Length: 520
Image (tube, rainbow, N blue to C red; front, side):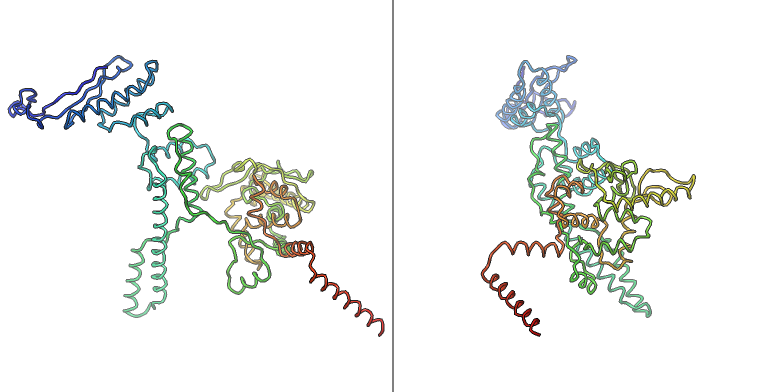
């Protein structure tokens, strides 16, 4: 294809406004004119001509260098690859028309070979929007992704080119989030201090009223209380971006995922702790929980179930406490998947919250689909609950909402998972027992099964875990007597002379004591 470099003078006749061209008196001056290039490109599919043109070069050498660059780009496609020839021609025509920098030859070769787009550049924000639009998961999951994208990813890295996103950019983003956390904590502390000071200022008196007015104005001018972006949220932001970039790799838009290599603080999940007598005493004295995740002893669980025995949802509390169903699974359990004759139920759905709205959904993972065995007492409890529900249906008559679920509101409609949690917390507070969360009843069920020496695989399957390691890591809170028995069994395996002599002395003393009683 034809291509050339040429000198060009842009001086114009002051009278006509036309370019002087070769008639310019200064044309022969060494630094007066600039150089331009023009390279013919393959014609469009409709046969019309197109070319690459660019001017403003200060030297012939610079102009010739860019002309060679254009020819090198055109040479990337083989003569028997008409599609590649057209893609390169379209790219160069756009670069020329938009006055963009010439693409790197090797990068263009890689993108052409990988089937990636050569024209234009996708930003991170554009890709995230496209990725979200293509997601086909439950609504609550989409909402969580959208929050990460809207609040964190777009503001920090949205304007960057997707193919030029680097690990360093993500490190800067998380550093900015950490800095913002520190600022938020400081602003929250300032607002709290002002509110506390306002509470100490009396209402009466001219000076006091002026002081209160001043403090209120200062508080109104302060930023509102805000939550910080905690470690778990930062991990979720990273996971969201990693998933989006993995899909970009799958579509051959990029070849490297920086989100897989950025390092941020790991999240340490709190370990479940049992409410021992000592911990209960300290809680009663200080009101402090030793851990966010607390588990009742079997005696405490029994006390709670006895306390709520007359509650309309007793069967739900019982089922979660003994079989470890999740809140949403219990709320969404249908009678059609509950076989009391065979002492089992199948977890095949759940009710989940999206904000405050409730929707039916399948279990989040394949392991969530599972069959849960039921003991005789739980079956009896559920049979009694079914009779009570039948009586409620008759009382409500035509106003009854037929959902087919095991646990419902008084009129048969769905239970709201959030309201179930609120009810549970009120019942725990009224019982006088040390506080636990509703999800901690599930922890307790797992702990009871492990304490009863149930095989870890059975416990894991009952809970719906994909791996027994999850069960061990999260739920294995050893009850005090279980730990004591394990310690004694371990100690008996090691023969010690000191222990043997102590046991011999104890037997001798016991024998002597029996002899004395006989003499008397």
